[in-house]
Amino acid sequence: MNGDNGRYFSRYPAFMSETTESLAALDDRLRGLLHDYARKEPAHDALAAEFSTLIDDAEDAFRRERVAGHFTASCWLVSADGQRLLLTHHRKLQRWLQLGGHADGDRDLARVALKEAEEESGLSGLVLDDPAIFDIDKHWIPERKDVPGHWHYDVRFVIRALGGEDFVLSEESLELAWRPVAEVASDPQSDESMQRMARRWLAR
Image (cartoon, rainbow, N blue to C red; front, side, top):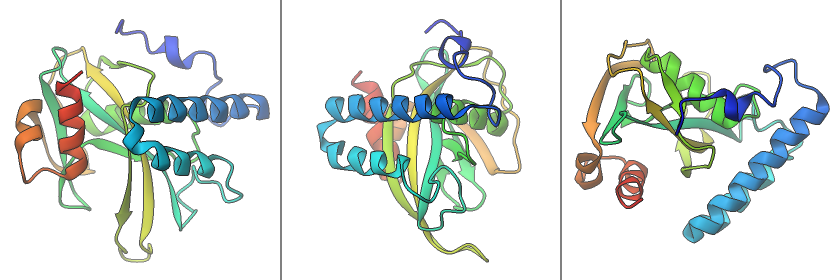
């Protein structure tokens, strides 16, 4: 951890101006990250393989218009000392979850996770703690208004808050709150994947 986000993102041009070659490099990088994650978390081997197949799907799985399901990115946003986790009481889903959102065409999911963390928390001084994937999760999003039910293929990265903990509430959230990671790990009311990530973080 050195606070240098450019270390991870500077090799690629800004989103929407990327060449075919750089997009292919991003896809190869994501495949490699998924492979490395599956090796580290063998219980998710089949799930990681399923995520990998989406990369080359004829319907762009990095866009929400792929109604069967699409990539999202989220963050395990921890305090500078790693003891607390910033959670959102999600306005649409009505649950306490990690921050994150749709890729909307960006194939660099770590970049998406960092952007979502910044936009949803209002925190400055956020850094990508590790370029490796921290967790993956496939979950069902129920039908809402004119959007049919669909799958989210969520790729999670560790983001660390080095610039303080004074967040700003965005329209995405009903509330934001810092919670001790140990508390999330033992809370039976926590989302199952939240408990899994909390236990993994505590065991690192």
